[in-house]
Amino acid sequence: MSEAKGSAERVWEQPIDTGEAPKSGEVFDAIVVGGGPGGSAAAGYLARAGKKVLLIEKDVWPRDKVCGDAVGGKSLGHVADLGVKADIESTPHFRVTGIVFSSPNGSRVRVPLPEEAVEKLEAGYALPRAQFDALLFIRCQQMVRDAGGAVIQGGDVRTVLFDDGNGGDDPGEGAGDARHAAGITVRIGGRKGKEFTFHSKEVIGAGGYRCPVAKSVVEESYNEPMMDRDHYCGGYREYWTNVEGCGESTGDIEIHFVDSVNPGYFWIFPVSENVVNVGIGMIMSLLDKQKKKLKALQADVIANHPKFKDRFANAEMVPGSAKGWQLPFGSPRKKSKKQPRRSSMNGIRLVGDAASLVDPFSGEGVGNALVTGEMAARHISEGKTPQEYQDEVWKVLGPELINSFRMQKLSRRSWLLNWFFGKAENKPALQEIMTEMIASKEAQEDLHSPWFMMKTLFF
Ligand SMILES: Cc1cc2nc3c(=O)[nH]c(=O)nc-3n(C[C@H](O)[C@H](O)[C@H](O)COP(=O)(O)OP(=O)(O)OC[C@H]3O[C@@H](n4cnc5c(N)ncnc54)[C@H](O)[C@@H]3O)c2cc1C
Image 1 (cartoon, rainbow, N blue to C red):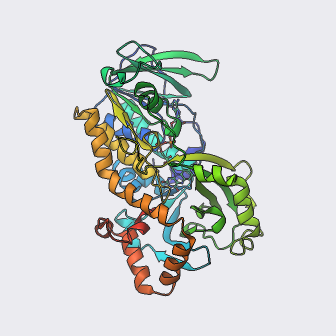
Image 2: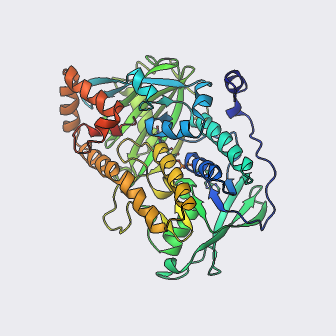
Image 3: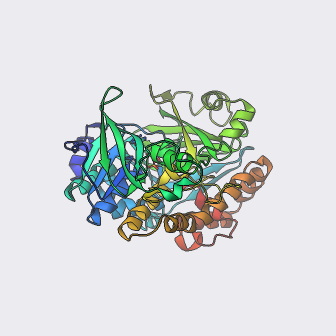
């Protein structure tokens, strides 16, 4: 995609031509369910390895995705590897030069992210997911089709087929190990559309937190719980214009710990052209206990909080942008043998939100979706076992997810946040360490450092 072309045509607002749907009954080397970051990446990497892939997305582009829209360094490595970084940079986006944190009692700390860090892919951007996902999908669907595969939009995957002849049916306790994926059924063309069947011995579930493939593995094949309200987070997002103190195309993103949204935070992330992503997130079980609604909580912070009400006095919410969604956290589950949850079985690998891998402190999930998309594709290409996939997911992501869960639990104590940011506000040396932890890979590797928490805040 040329520089001028990408932004002038605003390709992410246009339909994407993905060609004809294949004929029902066709056989593929792999089927990828879901065309978000995890699914696009998995399909792209498989195509690069020469596989004939079927990539199926339920929505039809252009499509929105509820998110904070922050794309950190972990994501940018894969975005560059898949050849999409230049496409993103040729379209309007917000270059993050720092993160502003504030504590419940108002201490404020700015952590700068140096330009060299961006060049080394350690820092990142903020841009609407509608745009980010479309650019990634455009590239990956082309890779799939160039390698002889096919792509379907508007395809709602209904069931996973198994070699024991059962579709979505419960095969009975412990029967998961005895069955192997054989394909999927998909309804194309809306509620009254036609059902198609496609065959493959390798299926990747990348359909987000309600992924039908994940359901088929976790609940139907192994009778294990999929949703856990202690480990799921409710998220709510609105786009606003004219929010005071937000830059146009470069500057800081803001993370505010506010008493009424604890544990969780209120974010203000500029995403480009005077548009700002504003949202909050909170653990589902705590929301249940407090009987609170995220939309009302956010309205209250914007209208009444002394730190924010003046900044929103002349701002306007973009009509239609108010949306909620869930974040399946990757925090370790006490009762589960597989951490954070079962993410594979014979012929199936789950990636991103389908495997419940969102960072439980920062809420970042795009990076882990891309990491596991690449991992699943590699494991299929190398013929590895489902257990090897489960093990590598936790080996690579487990340490930071465990650490982030600890930080999430600590952040439930307002006094601790007040103490920490109160100290950091007046200590340049502390701010430098925070920058180091966010921007430097070497420093991030020190998982036992108390500053590691800052790395988990997106970059
Ligand atoms: C409010 C909020 C704020 C967030 N903020 C951030 C942030 O700032 N930064 C960050 O990194 N992460 C953030 N996240 C998390 C991030 O959005 C997810 O972790 C990320 O989108 C996961 O990518 P994925 O590809 O696994 O799933 P998704 O992005 O959910 O993609 C799944 C795809 O599968 C498709 N699909 C679903 N069902 C089917 C079906 N039956 N058949 C075919 N296709 C199907 C969907 O249409 C979708 O396109 C946030 C999440 C929320 C809710």
